[in-house]
Image 1 (cartoon, rainbow, N blue to C red):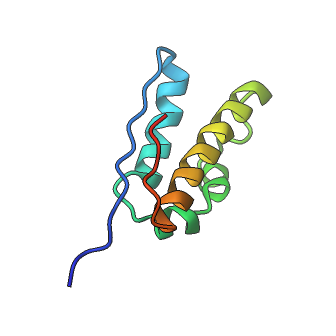
Image 2 (cartoon, rainbow, N blue to C red; image 1 turned 90 degrees about the vertical axis):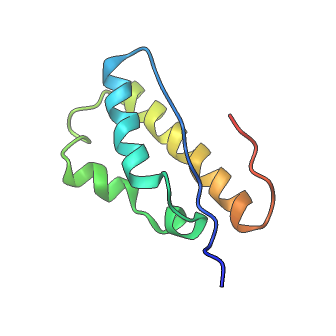
Length: 86
């Protein structure tokens, strides 16, 4: 029996704040199967970390833009499509 495929996510930023947000996203998503990614409640994770109160609306929008992209890649992978890199 083969293991289900996992997605390895790579991301970076020049901004130290965004690097920190990316680190949280990578811990939550990278190395997981598409199904695990889609089942992850990232809003709950950020809420537990208290980041919802600390982020400006622009940072929050950028963060959830990254989340939507990761979820889109996971949907494609779950459907058997080759995910496009971003």
